[in-house]
Amino acid sequence: MVDPADISNREQLSDREVAERFIELFHHQDNPGEAFRCWVHPDYIQHNPNAPTGRDESMAFLVNAVRNNPELTHEVKRVIYGDRTDGETLVAVHHHFRRTKSERGHAVVDILRIRDGYVVEHWDVMQPVPDLQDMKNANGMF
Image (tube, rainbow, N blue to C red; front, side, top):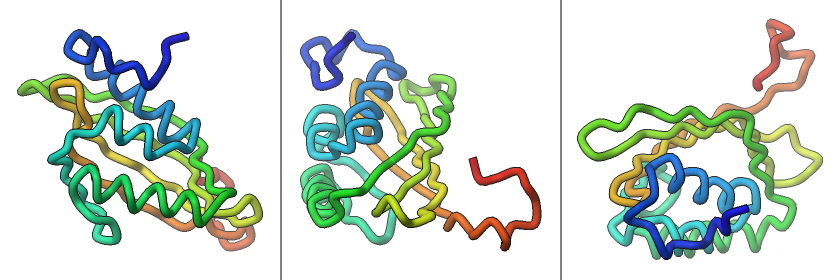
């Protein structure tokens, strides 16, 4: 298995490989500090209005969030890799986000723009997971 923190051959990695390593660290290992240190460009653009822009500012914000929520999880349900155009790729990560194990949490889609071996931009949409009795269908959120 490849070490997801190995940035030694960044310039030779495909956008998909960059995304996979970032997703492994951030979502599977719940380690945003390492994910951002390794794979996010210093001029990172953040579109979530509740988080700061810039790699270091966002990294500090996320590391603090994990520290304050030790049960926090990102259960990845699917990843959609877009086509490479104009030297960059968009990747969508659909996941079940929970701050605690007991809460229903949120269905989240993170959209990452990958360029030159870095995550350079991020958007997200979040939707609370409703109680089963409040759902109008039996399809579920995931």
